[in-house]
Image (cartoon, rainbow, N blue to C red; front, side, top):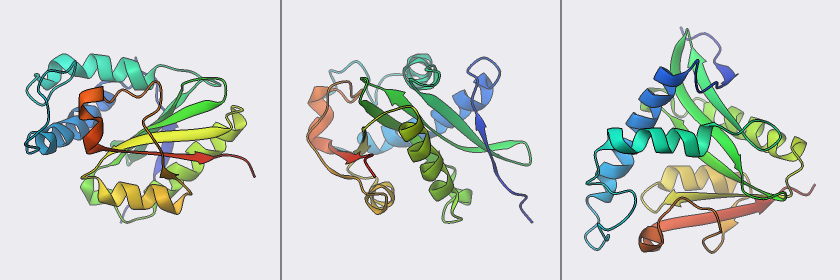
Length: 180
């Protein structure tokens, strides 16, 4: 029987191994799916052909290092094992970006993504943001269904996205207001 999951504020120094492992798993899956896209340009700062280990430190720095009230990043743990992650990254005084909402496959469909989403939405409001945005590759249909349940709607690419311009045709961009 699984004990109750914990949502912990991630510390990049203290949780570096867990964050690297989750990001490697997540980005490895993303890059493997992108490698199947026939018309995806290979000339980009990040690429499915780039060794993942070269990109991981940049990915961690981009999404895990902001502190409240600019941003926050969480680890989900069960019995001391990291099972998921997700966070907020401030893009402006009004706009935050939802980043890396990811659960290992064995922990999906247990309501954990809902707990994480509710925490992140509450944080974004508490930090004073008025809008929240995200990007999701077109093949991430289950994630997009989750985001729609939480009021996210399609939008054009936004300033500050880490998705290279040449990849944006293969991405879904979404946003929602945080007004009550």
